[in-house]
Each structure stands twice: as C-alpha cells, then as structure tokens.
Length: 287
Length: 352
Image 1 (cartoon, rainbow over the protein chains, first blue to last red):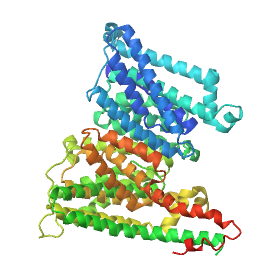
Image 2: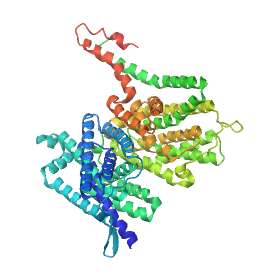
Image 3: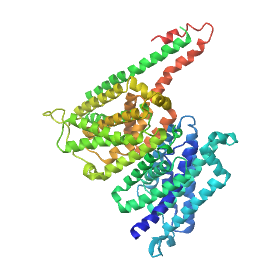
Image 4: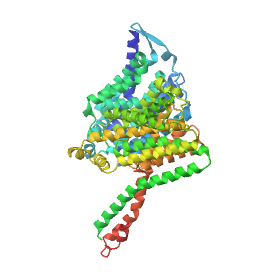
C-alpha cells in the first residue's frame, strides 16, 4: 500500500508545485502570446536563491522564499521589457528571444552556483518525519503541500474575485475589448509576465527541499510546464491545474513503478491528450 | 517605362537573382572547401569537416522552419536516428559509405514521418513547443537505450567507412573533408531541387494563407508531412556524416544544444535560404569555437547571446538583410517616379 500511497501523495504535492509554475506560463501565453521558454530558468533561479539563502532558521527560510519570488519577478520584468521591444514581430521571435535568454541564464546560474545539486538547509522541525494514519511521511513535504494548496487557493481568489484577475482573464479572451474599456493590454501582458516570474521563483523555492536544484532543473521544469500548458489547453488556468496534478502523479508513481519508462509515460500521455482533443489548440494560437 | 512596369521588372530581376543565388552559393562553397583542402594543416581539415554534419542538419531545419513554416527543434530526432543507424552498421562490419547514407536517410525519414504524423497538425509556437519535447526526448532516449547507444558513455572506436569495396577506409583528414563536403553539397542541392517550382509555390501558399490553400483543394497537412519527412531524410544523412567525421557519438551530440544551434543558424541564415542556413552554421560554429576558446565551458552563454542579438538585429535573417540593403537604392529613387519629369529616370535601374 505504502508503495503507491506515498508516491501518490508526493505526486499531488509535486503537481500543485507544477501548477503554480505552469499557471503563469499559460496565462502569459494566453494573454500576450509570449511563449516564455525562459520560464524553466526562472524556476531554477528561484530554487538556487532559496537553497543559498535558507540556513536552517525560520527567518532565513522566510527570506529565502521571499527572495526567490523577488528574483523570479525581476526576471519576469526583464523578459517583459525584452519582449515588449519585439511587439508586432510575431510570437515566434518572442519565443526565440526568451530561448536565448534561457541559454544565457542557465549558463550564468551554473557559473554562480556550480554544477552540483543543491538542497536548502531547513529548520529541524521540517527535517523530521511524522506518522499519519500509520504511514511515515516527511514533514517538509507536508509543509510544501500545505503552502502549495494555499498558493493555489490564493491564486484562484485573485484570478476570479479581484479586478486585476478579471482584467487578466479578459485579456486572454478578448484583447480589443480590454483596450476598449481603457486598459492597455500591453500593460496587462507585462504585469502577467512579472507575476508569472514571481510564481515561477516561488515554485522553484518550494521544490528545492524535495528535489534539490541543479543544472538540469531548468530544462526539466520547462519541459514539464510546457506539457502541462499544452495538455491543459493554452491560456486555461483550471486546465493547467488538472494537467499539473496528472503530470505530478504520473511523474512520481511512474518513476517509482517503471523507472525506465517514466519520460515516455508522460510524453505518451501528452500525445494521447493531443490526439483526442485536436480542437483544443485553435488556429488563433498561431503566430 | 512607367512605374508599375519598373516595379515588375525589378521583381523579376530579384526573382532571377534569388534563383541564381543557390547555385552561385555552391560555387562559393566548393571554392572555400577547395581552399581549405589545399592548405597543409590537417587540424583545419578535421575542424572544417566536423562542421558539415551540423550544416546538413541545419539545412533540414531550414526546410521545416522556412519552407514548411513550422519552427522546429525536433530535427535532432531523425539526426540521431541516422547517426545511430550508421554507427550500428559500421560496428556490425558494414563499411560501405553509400549503404550508411541510404540507411541513415531511411532511418531519418521513418523517424520524422512518425513524429510528423503527430506534429504537423500544429503550427507556429505550439509546434515549436512540441518539437522542444521531441528534442528532450531524443537525448533521454539516446541516454537510456543502452543496447543501441551505449548509454551516456556513447559509442567510440567506430570503424571508418569505405567509398567502394576494396578501397582503403576514409581516415585521412583531407579525404574525409572532401568526402563530407561532397555529400553535404549534394544533399543541399537535392533539397533545393526538390523544393523548387510548384512545390516551393505550394509551400509558400500554405505559409501565407493556409485557409485559402486548403479551400482551394490542397492537402495542406499532407504537403507539410511530406516536407517534414523529406527533411528527416536529410537530417539522417547529416547524422551519418556525424559518424563519418567524428567516429564516436554520445547522447550530448544529439541533444538540446545541437537542436538550439541548428535553429539559431536558421534564424541567422534566413529561414527559406538553404545555403544561407548552411553558411550560418559554419559561421556560428566558428564564432563558438574561436571565441569559446577564450571562455571555456561557456558555450551556452555565447550561443544565447548570439540568439538574442540575432532576433533583435536580423529580422528575417542574413538573406533578408542583403535583400533589404539591395532594395535601399530603389526606395530612395522611388519618389522621383511621382515627379512630373520623372518617368524615364528610373529606367536604368530596371534593366539587368
């Protein structure tokens, strides 16, 4: 029982983290058409900053999470400025630009933090394990699960109950109408990129205690986020959440059950979703 | 001659120039290869030969990205299929170069055909995103499928190929360079010939207005799939050349960096110009190897910076740059067309 239950809970926790990371990516694509291929680099940057800042005390842990989100937001701001200069040149040029930024960012991160996998030092309480209903489970994962649930809930409230969130959803649906009510859609695009960056940094910080952060983090995170965005339907946050949970469970249960096949399980699942729902990616999503 | 006629003849001249350009590019390529081969430095021969497999891969990426209009990072999959097919054949004792090339082209076409069946339904950035997944998966597969690829250690000591049974194997640096250049140029020429005439026009129509091409009764998806599969065969040949020039392979050779480099070269070279893409590959590799020598271990940094610069400074690539420069004088003269005494002035511009 433990062999499947523990990975399944891990999978839900991982899925929620991926949802936090992918939500920003999908909204940025849906609203401004920016396919941010540097998203994985922002996640890795958040992870590195958090791992370097957290030194085993509660204040340092709080600082680590805040700094990671801040670094992500700053990265998002840089990307917003860089892609804004390419307005009118088509989505492809923006994607290629962020791709170049991702290559540069990955190299700078490796130069700054080395090529080893880093893990943050957490307060001792979090390093222990607890027994819940007869199953042993690490406290840090429970904490991450709790924080992830809180962030997803807060994200839902912001997106559906605040004016800013409504503007973002309106920009995804109809840019011209948003411009018509006196809001510059490009401002929304930039704000979305900054917010997406902050969420990416946060996701990176929350993932490091479980998976660590290393040179492959950016690629893996980007690949998983892209799969989630494609499977969830571009621009759809609920779709991304569903897809992220599925990806998280497939990744963790798949890795423990069929280690060699795990990457193919995921790509295979994506292929099935794409073939089954051919209409979910409208022609309007093209450049 | 009046204004519109001038415009038409200028278009014709430019079209002729575009038609003549690939073949003059081959003359130039042959001259450069000849000059390198004449030099006495074997290191130069080996360095030049090792750039060419990637140049063939880039030409294949240019076919998919520029002509089919589907920006791709996924052509490393047929490239890897061709490379590992060649390596396995050579290690099994089959050393005829022609057999290697045919097997690699076949393996590349089958791989690209299978992937294309899923991928060509999508367009633009979505296609790019999916091809990124293909590129990642290629490296993962190459690392995991140990019986074929030798795992992350790769395959080393692959025997050199022979041109004909009984001839000595291709090991001398100069011979390898001449052989590789001949195959690379022939493959590029074949691609240009296959993409000429009606096929070029049809793909251009699909790129420009897919709905209209489809409404006119064209099998858009079938055209794109065919182009994608043909490009796969080309990438497979590039993979065979990778084995023939390096004689070892690791999963990193068919990984994400290779895919990125090929796409970058296409962006710089101008997406629809196949010789431009090949030339840009050589330029990018030269910059990476020359400048990279002073920054060891920072090839991705350099590559990324080149990417950002290319996107900002070269919209449409190098070939578009030359077209923009060429069109500048015409633009400057154009106002004279509208002056009362103007009509006969620009005539000199429009005659070839």
